[in-house]
Image (cartoon, rainbow, N blue to C red; front, side, top):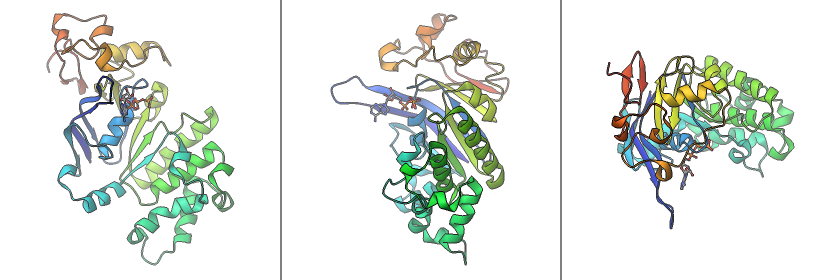
Length: 303
Ligand SMILES: Nc1ncnc2c1ncn2[C@@H]1O[C@H](COP(=O)(O)OP(=O)(O)OP(=O)(O)O)[C@@H](O)[C@H]1O
């Protein structure tokens, strides 16, 4: 359904070294599936998700949605596609207008896209339906954001995200600001909604337990690259980085280095950290298909 090919994002902050935030990433999310994107802080997960929506322009690479190259679309056509892809961010407050009642934020998509309202339906009826789907009371929706808890706010953001029946919801660490029991409730809600609405999820997290629980497939990121991707990645890891993080449950031990600082020029992105590196790892590694997986490592045999 959505596919990024060769996506690269280089930031050039004034007076600082350039940052290769996303480096030649190929990524595909199929209709109705959940892809968990896991990696340490700073490895490029959020930048990659913003590239997929063309919220920021890629330095190199292209994005295809249902076969259409987004770069070739006019702004109006791109807006129609963006309707089909919604984001649930880490901080729900950032997605809701603090001066609006929550109900008004949830219904905003219908004001922007009045044609999206099902024929014969009133906005109020849709609001009631959405609140029911996410488990919020009408009374809660009549409050302002600062009058709701973090979990309630995230439910409101999810209600807004599903209003236009998206084909894909990008969940960018949607539970990391919540306490553990609220986290579990929000995850269950997202899973239930996905089943009911049939949408795909790109679930971004640095929590490998969560990635394991929610993903049909998992993509592991390091230093701006996807280093391993497929089914069962966290159960039977092949890449040295995936093996390392899965051997230390809940590791926060390997903060992602900024590639321009730590990377040996031209080498595999994991070169400086890899206990198994050989001479060929001084050269960039390409993605290889192996046992139904994609792995970016010279030491994985060619299929
Ligand atoms: N607008 C920007 N200008 C300059 N550098 C940026 C910009 N946005 C992101 N970066 C840098 O790009 C790299 C990747 O950042 P990104 O936010 O995508 O990582 P992440 O994996 O989502 O991290 P986290 O889990 O902490 O949100 C980081 O080094 C970050 O500092």
